[in-house]
Length: 139
Length: 139
DNA sequence: GCAAAGTCTACTAATTCGATAGGAATTATG
DNA sequence: CATAATTCCTATCGAATTAGTAGACTTTGC
Image (cartoon, rainbow over all chains, first blue to last red; front, top):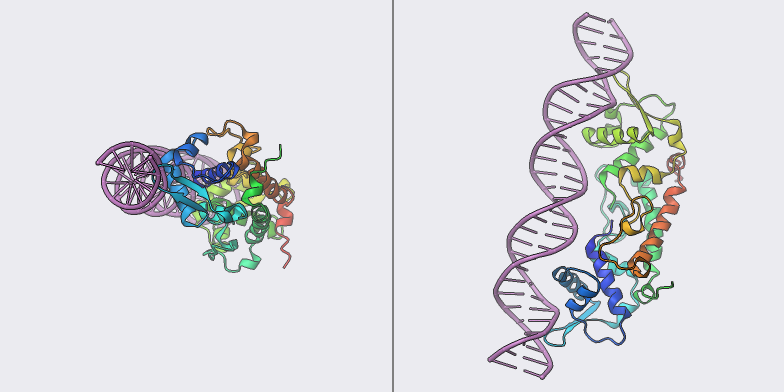
């Protein structure tokens, strides 16, 4: 299950990427357009800024805007910031690997091997879709 | 993230499918072999039995065993019993569909469309791998 | 100086997860 | 028939996570 944090984060990124120009957008504007709790969105955008994908400007006329690199960034990167691991099981995670306590031999664990397949197929989507492509919505 | 319930359930199914013959196996045996809390496994196997994939026998010499159909059953079926929806978002779930409260038009939601892709690629693995194939572990 | 924005920390309510406890029902065996 | 072994079932629990809220602080433009 995708957390709301990730869902909201992706929707906000999509919103910003779809805008003409790149003027700062206020949190309140996005939150209203996408039906997201404003305070919650606040913390989500903050984490995307800290990760280096958004810029921000305080004060009147301020808001958030996409940094240039964001458009070419694959969704996998945003997913990892917002949700964490893409893998369904830590023992097959590339970026958040952890051994399973219960599993003596990973390579012989059927679940492990299955989840590698699932991870790879999900990854091929998330790594090969940039934010730019994400918002090109082919009806 | 895969819940432990699903992970344990799949491991238990794998254990049973790998056995010679189809004599009942006691919960305690599986729980020890796979390092799973016995009481927890108890409830997991019970739900697989209620779903019609396992048989059980009480009393001495009793235990759980695979019903014939289980071997030919795709993992997707077990996943849905144990974990619930395969989709990462209810609005793209085939078996557990729910509308998103925040989304006025699903077909124009980028997250929705992305998650359809993810669902389909995951599904193609889980629907095309039967329990039988699952345990044929190609080193 | 004032109002409008983001920043930051802390808190909370609800839910879910993994696990446990304990007894009831059923079956094999001697 | 008595006993032990096993599944069946209900109830409960603590910890963690999630989604959201509150409120004060900082920066900026006018």
